[in-house]
Structure formats: structure tokens, C-alpha cells
Image (cartoon, rainbow, N blue to C red; front, side):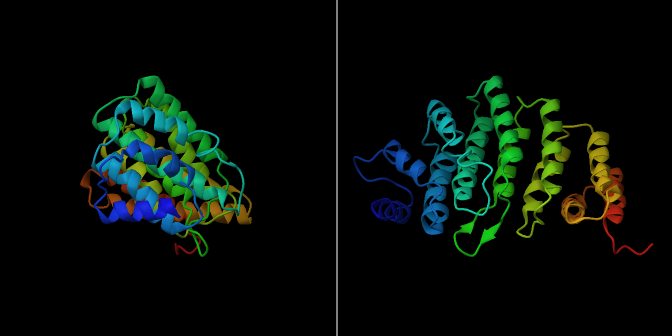
Length: 276
């Protein structure tokens, strides 16, 4: 495949192009094969290309990144066959999310989106998180799917944008709760750590009132009041693991005594094996 050979050559040359080549020339093919079932092409070549050219080398102008975002969030990329489960379309959706995170990070460093555009992107990502039903992590055939983690990477960047309102941050917390209480999947590939990144930033940068975060943490124990079912077990175990990850992430912060107390108290409620 010519694209794979070209990308392997560019990678070998430290992502520098040959005379007469332009990064824009590769974009249509990068986007066409962004969700290729072969992890060698999708994960090892195409995504690193986006990473280097967007994050490390700043090859794209703000206008180019705006145009790229429009494609990445369309029905052929982030929303390609949205709602489907157990098929290969998940790769296109999740590997469209990863460059979105890089684009938002670039915006935070040197703004080029309007407030309305950031708000629209936040709504788009919230819609994606709600409609994405394929929550698998690593697949024996195909490699990483990781929709929850890749979406979380975008939210980590979005919540730090000054254009993101308090109301939007609250919606992100609801989206996290919904993912923990997803009814079908216990996370086993460290999605909890990627979700914790979002809340950790909110705490670290005081993006929401401390008490509001504490109350949200406590609310994760509400699933314990539901009748025993597989869905209830999934919510309980995901929330328990999430809180453990958050606790060890924030454990060295002496300012967080109240927060740590809420985490520990909620974990005890979620843990069926706690001995009182």
C-alpha cells in the first residue's frame, strides 16, 4: 500500500517531507484511512503523523485546523455508524477523536476558535459520548478501540478552554457519570484513568467550586440504592475503580482533605467487600 510506505518513510525521516511534498497533500488519505482496521497503519503511522504535525511541529494554520475539525466531527468520521457495537467502525470514530484533542490543545496555546465554535465542539463531543455504544478497550484483532479514553482526552482539553462555561463543565461531569453507569461494560483497559484526567484538571485548576466536585463524587454512590442487577454492578464497579484512581492521583494534595474524605466515604459505599 503506497500510503503505508510513504508514512513509514516519513516516520523514518523524523516526519520531514521530501522536496516538492506538502503536508496538505497527505491529509485526504490520512482522513480516508484514519480508522483502518490495521493498527500498524491507524495507530502506529496515521495518528503519530497527526501528533507530530499538529502538536510538535505546528505545521497547520488556525484556518487549516478549523477545516480539519469540520471533517473530523462529521458523519464519516466521529459519527461514522454511531451507535453500532462490536464492529470495526469504532476505529474510525475513536481515532477521529484523538486529533480533535490535539487541535483543541493548539487552540489553548494560541487561540483561533471563537467562543461559539468551542461551545459547539463541546456539544458535539457530549453528543458523541452519549451516542457511542462500543466501549471496548483493546481488541485481539484490530488493537485499541478505546472510545471512552479517546473521548476523555478531548474533554481534558475542552474543560481547560476559557470559553467553556460552568454549565458545560457540569454537563461533562454528567457525561462521566453516564459512562461509569453504562449498563454493559466494566472498564478493564484503564479508561478510568483517562476519565480521572478530566476531573483532576477541574480540581487542580479550580474550574468548578470545590463543594460541587465533592457533591458529584458523593453522588456516584447512588447506584447502590438500585436493585441488584448486572447494570447496577457495572455502575458500582466502574465508579469504585474511578474513585480509587482519583484518590491516588490527588492523594498528595494537602488541600484536598475534604475531597479525599468524600472519595473514601463514597468508595466504602460502593465496595461490597468493605468490612465495617
